[in-house]
Image (tube, rainbow, N blue to C red; front, side):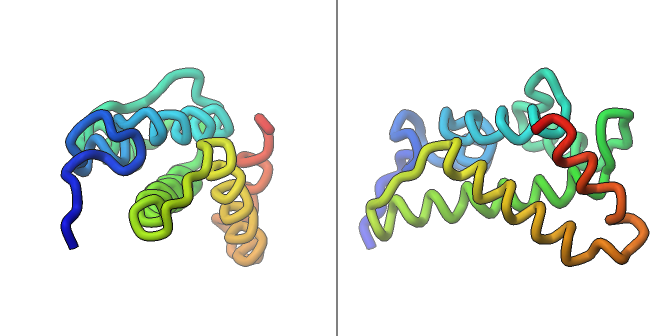
Length: 129
């Protein structure tokens, strides 16, 4: 395949890991919605290093388990959106992608609700809904 080096989400920069998953305007829109839902009032990271530190950091805002779950779901959905635009030619808005992430997070929490560390996560996830 002859694939352009430009970002398939915004077509404004060369696509690399940091741009695609963190700095692209589409990714930033998704992260803003996700971080707001978690209770963060600011964008917590702009580099891959700061992102991995944020995921690992214990803080008073939310559970580290929930941050890890949300990070995995967000990265996965950004990648799926990129591939959808590349292979199918369909584009979704950050709000639509966030709704998919929201449903996924709720499903995982409900599916694991009997595990002690997952019991408080639904309340943490929906408290800023």
